[in-house]
Image (tube, rainbow, N blue to C red):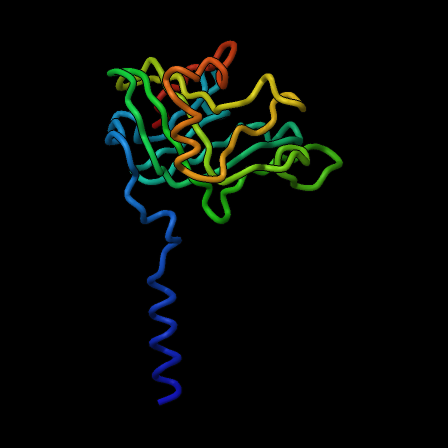
Length: 181
């Protein structure tokens, strides 16, 4: 009987998923044109996003240069501003918290800057079947510059990342992404 309970427990654990991954996203439905693999132009094997109906993963594609920045999160909220622009808010998965590495340093979140929370925003624009501009949020006016703009709760993230505040979190030129086969 003791072994039966052990086997049952193993089956239960095997079937469990990270609870963040199974939550239904709030807000507008995710635009299905976003689902897929996107890579920066013109070098399509570099920076990019992998997006499913539930998960968004990002890599900066610079591992071969000795430094790297990657993260992964469950899609928790989406907002369409119009037919080609919008916002995705993710909650970092357990293993998907941002990691930054550079020569001579161990993996550390944002070069030692404490991350305030598990919710993060990604804006998109110019969406069509073959390309999109995806932009990670950053806080340019923070001390130190580029401090992470994450929030502790989803409600804070929805209030913070909006159509009207995106210029505060996205500045300069965002690199267009092409659908990657």
